[in-house]
Image (cartoon, rainbow, N blue to C red; front, side, top):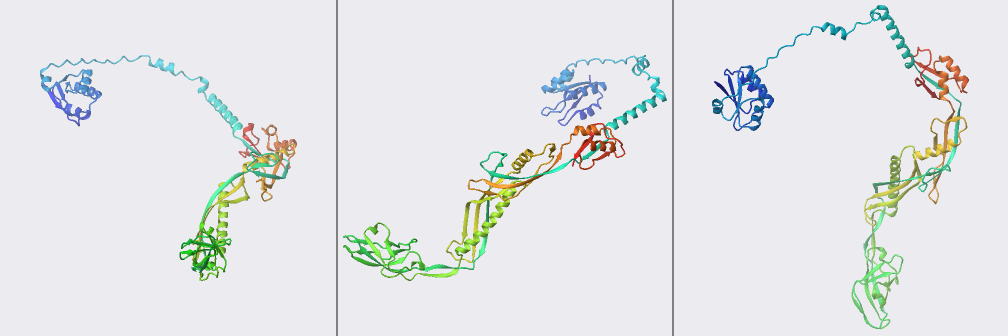
Length: 496
């Protein structure tokens, strides 16, 4: 039997293969898979191609060595061959016969089934009177529901009012753990580090050491042996701030008590401070001082200072005071930013706890026309939280509230005196507290007097049941509604 061979390519898919099958004129069509390439055809695609070939009056066969394609084809009853020559020589299995699907006979009882599914409406529902009655019942139900839920009322009451005022003595300390009725309240510690650099123009003059003072030192032997006095031996005065000198030459002191020798000396540091009076140099530093004594028979001279622009101790103190004040203000601002606006900062506990860096440029004794100071300081202070203050105020005020009154709002308080810290670390200050208290109002009783009443009647009921400082006010929404709601949730009560 004649067979039409179609060789597939790697890019072929279901659509392209169907297009190739459309030109088939033979009773058999053979699809040949490429040897080294794969064709993207699934088992569902093979089923579609089989039916398409069947619709064209041809039997579909495959030539491939791919195991997955062979398994899919055999499952669908499509003959598979190893080569095209084998497909032409071997016998093809007969295709399965087609089953003819016969249409079902139409049902004859459709009208009966429809009548059972959709029974006719009652006569009263189809009549005009019945429909008008049903519509009227619906309108009445809607109006009833609207009358229950739509109206809303706002009632403003003005009960008797008093002003409760007192002055509390407060003691705050970090050692207190909780708020107590006697006024004790815990304090908390704050710490900030601030730094600044500032420059000050210098107009002062300072003395700069220029030349060293010189003189003669007389050494006296205190022993019986010869004493070697090397060059550079250090001598000094006996004042609180000793002035040091060194010998310029090495010498030998003859043996024997009261033997002496004179040696030239020079001040260790330059400046007028090296000009000392006769008899001022009396100390020999080091072990050599046990064997010899020293003195200067004449004053030392030649030490001079030169005048130049430079920072004096007063300039340094002035610049430090200015920078310190700026840092105090900055530290205070930072601390207030770390706490809430209602917290109370105890300013009398504010102090510079530690100087972390203090550098002057130029250094002390050096010339310069400007002085720069870099200062870094850690400040500490204590504060009282508004939460603890409110708790203390509430405890004190609630303990003294009159019978029959209530306080709907929180008390207002303000420090009356500045905090003062004693030597035990406890800060004492006074707080002025005040709040408005109102006569107690039973809300359930109010609702019982108002529900479903007209505005005028409701106001009269409130005036007779309670002692009010002025007439109550009632507003309704919608405004054209005549009576207060029946549902209590729709009545809002405000006390002023």
